[in-house]
Image: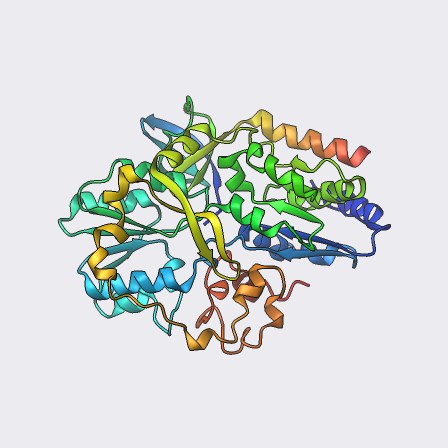
Amino acid sequence: MCLAIPAKVLEIDYPFATVSLGGAKRKVRVDLLEEVKPGDYVLVHVGLAIQKVSEEEVREIERLWEELLRE
Amino acid sequence: MGGVVERIVQKIREESKEFEEVKIMHLCGTHEDTVSRYNIRSLLPENVKLLAGPGCPVCIIPDEDLQKVFHLLEKEDVILTTFGDMARVPFEGKSLFHYRAKGKDVRIVYSVFDALEIAKNESKNVVFFAIGFETTMPSTAVAVKEAPENFFIFSAHRFFVPAMEALMPNSEIDGYINPGHVSTIVGVVAYENLTKYGIPMVISGFEPEDVLLSILMLLKAIKNREPLLMNEYVRAVKYEGNVKAKEVMKEVFEAEDGSWRGLGVIPNSKASLSKAYEDRDAEKFFEDVFEDFVPKEDKRKRNCLCGEILKGKAFPTDCKLFMKACTPRDPIGSCMVSFEGTCNIWAKYGKSL
């Protein structure tokens, strides 16, 4: 229920998008997010994209880990 | 990534040396899944206790809500739609699947949008039994705004942040791992008011490294009494959360006092449909049906510890019914039904203490 899965946006047909969820194609709503485009990564929860996840932010976590482990 | 876990665990061991005992509670069923799946408790030092809190939206729904939905199905010829694990929760040995087997039109959906599609293609009234915290509420809100005349919501949605506020005063917990995907919606900002209780919190992702790192961050914060609010899940949780989602939730729902399994009545924790959308509220539309509704107690659940497990006061293995009378195949309590229920997770991966 609380699980949200990262998915890659393939096509936009507003307010829907076709995303790739671990290889499976699904139609999800993207209208609660700003400016979603093909190639973006989104977190999908029960048919709704709830947040964009950028590659930059994925790298940010690695930086945070390094910082904490160095201290 | 291989060495990262070992390095974090080593740091946790160093940081925890000076504590007699530290109690950390996570607040999301999906965190318990990560903890049990990767046996994270076995990696922690003896004095660091990791407890499961009320983070399973199926588990915390009181029997009264479930009974009301059963009552509606018995009295009205509707198409009842809901998520799969909700349909398996028993009350007096019956579940929504039981009603389907008896010929009632109960349909399992992946999302509220599937239920909306059913309503658009059918002439009968369609009721969506809506459960979930702030993660799930925005999807229901979007669907309500587009609902055709024959689409209704039975809302068992609960706001999670008020439940945290109810837990925190006089708490024995030294630090909380906040729910990652609730936080995606509500943002870091939603917890700022809770820092007044002086208990450190960290918003955490769901990889084993995320959970371990969050524990390390908490240990440091508990030692120094600061910072009280941290965000480990920066790749998905923004300070302000999802503003559009919050707006649509605010438009469609209003907060009322709501009851939670194990926790009792929590002020402003139930999300009911707001005045503007009350014509989509199943409890209002079928008001006459509920006139003779009387809540009952399920005698089978007398020895069920689900309520205590949701408060972090008991582990599944403390329950007399666990894996004896109550199993994933034939559950008694909701904690054994849901994929996010601690009993179900422990049944799947084995005891993880």
